Image 1 (spheres, rainbow, N blue to C red):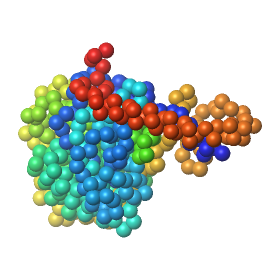
Image 2 (image 1 turned 120 degrees about the horizontal axis):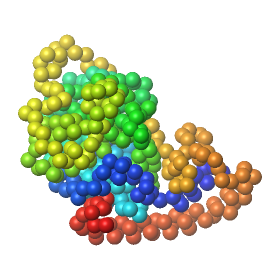
Image 3 (image 1 turned 180 degrees about the vertical axis):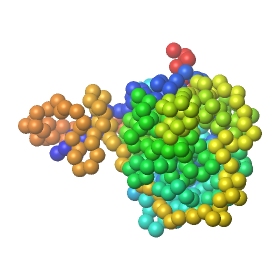
Image 4 (image 1 turned 90 degrees about the vertical axis):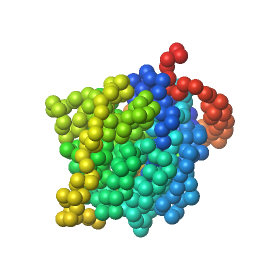
Length: 409
């Protein structure tokens, strides 16, 4: 009964501009930059390129999991939804009326699927292959919203990540989540030179879901973030996996603003303009601070070397005695459905699907509501689907400013 009502709630509740709260809260709606000309590789579980909010965003892709489609545009493994949600925060094509609005909606995406959640999958080798493929296919930024649940990494990653740095490619990685049973950042976020992203709540406190530690480079929103979910729907999620693509999107805007800036320059501008929170200076909760998009876009800071360290120097000094360790990628937590704009828009996970907050209906009404509303669900689904397709057609005809640009108002 509750499942039926939840399904009906999902049909009746489209995503709106209010759900994309970080766009306005962090000033992304105050710039005309949209990520045009920048290519971002998403190494994850694959991107559902058919989702309306990602229409035309994926320009190329590949599958290294051996169980996905050749171009990486279908979800693989037990966390098949994850790559799509990550991609939507970077380049979501939503509008003020409906959908997920990405930080860089005109950026081009490369969808690279690996076997996250695929039993027996050698994800260490697949990530090494994916890094090189991304660089060779024009990636300016590589997003890794995944963790190995270990601070160490395999030797094969040395050359793969080094290849990205040598080719002036930015690498952004999620620091990790406490749900992974790790209290400190994990690889690939611990690799020198990688932009390790931790998370904060809506009120800019350290996010409970995100790990903390000296391996965190920068912090970004990581709570109550709306993401596109496969099959034309939406979910709300928390954690550093959601914070990382926001940073990748910001770097795309920064690269568009100054195409001549090197990867090292952009890293210096990102961390050099961050808002200092917590303990003065660098600290374990916020790293160098919380992202400050306006200041980062205006910055002209430069750096000859990667401000976050040199992987090449680390290899020379530590690799001979370093352990590789055996570990598997941590599985993402299933995101929460959007059910209501009037209540909290979240439901509790697990088997209990009761909406968070006080129900407006008395228990005795539930059976009656079920029998009255359940037959209407197919009709509502058809109506909303047609409406959504109309929005997608209108979106494809839109040219010029990004959908989150408010300068014309």
